[in-house]
Amino acid sequence: MATTVTAAFNEFLKDKVNLDSNKVSTARSSRNSLIDEIHKLPSKDSSFPDLYSDKDINFGSFERKTKKRPLDDIDMMICLNAKGSTYYEYSDRIEITVNPDAKNLKALCNLSTDTLNSVKVVNKFVSGLSNVPMYKKAEINRRQEAAVLNLTSYDWNYDIVPCFFTTENILGKSYYLIPDGSGNWKKTDPRIDRKRTSDINQKNNGNVLNVIRIMKYWNKRPTMPSMSSYLIENMILNHYEYKTDASQYVDVNLPEVFLYISNNIHYSVNDPKGIQGNINTLSYEDRIKIQNRANLDYQRSYEARRLEDENKHKESINKWREIFGPEFPTYG
Image 1 (tube, helix red, strand yellow):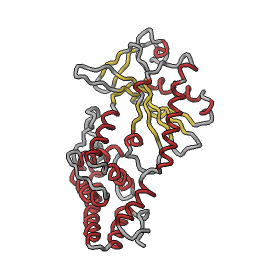
Image 2 (image 1 turned 60 degrees about the vertical axis):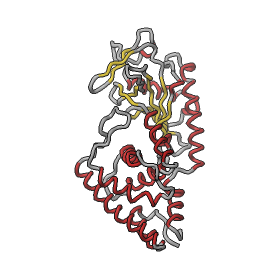
Image 3 (image 1 turned 30 degrees about the horizontal axis):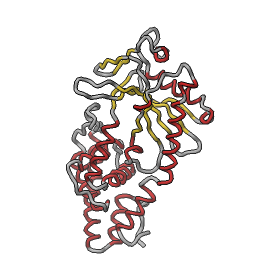
Image 4 (image 1 turned 90 degrees about the horizontal axis):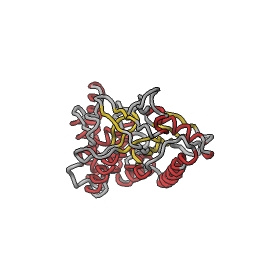
């Protein structure tokens, strides 16, 4: 319960939207311990591929600090030493050809070929983790591009993605190659997402992250089809990319954000990494529903801001509850 709109939003962010700081600290410590154990795998298993640990990278919304509650997964990329292997990029996939001297990678190739099978690589991580005493009772399996570790002692999973780091191309660009879920590989570069998020947030005095997290909460409410977390995050970043005036008060920012989504949900949203192309793969029907909901909540948020300006905090809080639902604080 709150008697001002600012207090209501502070309570909502603290208790329902943002991750609990103690959990974040525990999660980071546990993640670091897991990485340490993974780094020991080649010394414990002579058939495990050599690592290139200097290029390991944490990624995903937890790393970018754009994750809302609950904390359900933590992503990390563990880099392997290519040992002189090469890759070739086709229109629909990337294939890695293993150097004949790289015996541990050779063992993970497609039968009677030098083509590295990414499913076998992920499964090698699954089996390797299964032999670590502290993880023996954990649920460990493969899901698409990641080895998934689920410890019963925590609420979250770890998605462990094996990867390779490429040499620079003629444009001076390097990439990470990760499994594509079908046995081949694909490009990514979480460094770009991480830097872009940080740069835009800092340019706006650190006020964008709360907007992203609260809009992800809105996106998951059962009032419309949900966008992917990555899509809504990038739409909000696009909105703030050339701005420097995001307010420290989240509610002040929301009307223009709702309006931006309503006005732009039908357009392409380009992958900032320049790899995936258009990441807005929503159907036309879903775009219409999201547009209508965003427009309705734009009108509601505009009205809520007007009521707050008139010092009608109870009425304003009730209007915000129409947008965010029963978990938003009540007046009192």
